[in-house]
Length: 211
Image 1: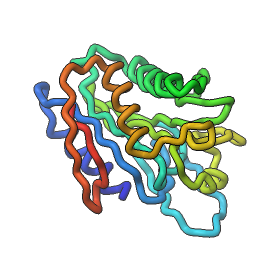
Image 2: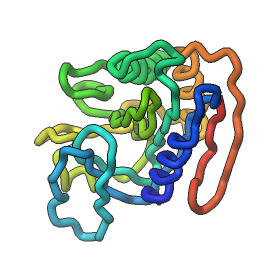
Image 3: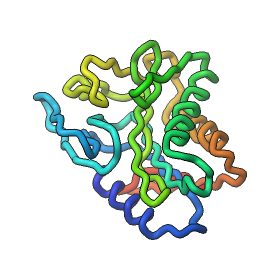
C-alpha cells in the first residue's frame, strides 16, 4: 500500500546518520495513481476506482500496480559523490544496460526523465532528496495492465505511449527481472558488498535489498 511505504521511507530517512548503510527497497504496489509535488492533474473517468495520492516526490502523475517493479533507493548521495542529476542519469543508464543485455535499444529524452523503447516509456523516475539523501525512486513496467495509464497524461505528457518489458520481447518474470536490474544498478553505484534481505508481508511486499 503506497501510503505506508512512503511513510516508512520518510521515517527511515529521517533516522539515518552519516554511517547508516544504504538500502534499496523493491516491491509491487497495489493499484494507485500518484502525483508529484507540483502536479494538480486528475485521472479522467475510469470504469474502476483507483486511489489518487499526492506524493512529495518530483515529477508529475503516474500509475503503479501489480506487474510493475518499483525501486526505492535510500542512498546518501554525498557519500557516493553524486549530484541529483548524476543520480537520475545513473538510474537511466542502469535500465538501459539491462535492456541492452536483452538486445533491446533503450534511450532517454531531454527534459523527460525515464527510459524509452521506440518512443514509448518503459521506466519512470521520481525522486526526493533530503539533506543529501534520496528516497522515492523509479519504476519499470514488466507485465502489467497498462489500461490505467490511458486515463492520465503520464509524467505530464499528453499522448505519451507507455510500454512494458513483455511487449518489447523480454519475457522473464518479475523475480528474474528484479535480480538483473538490481545487479545493473548496484554495479553503476560501485557497491562492493551487496546483501539481500527478503521481507514479505502485507504492508511492504518486497523483497528489499540492503546494501
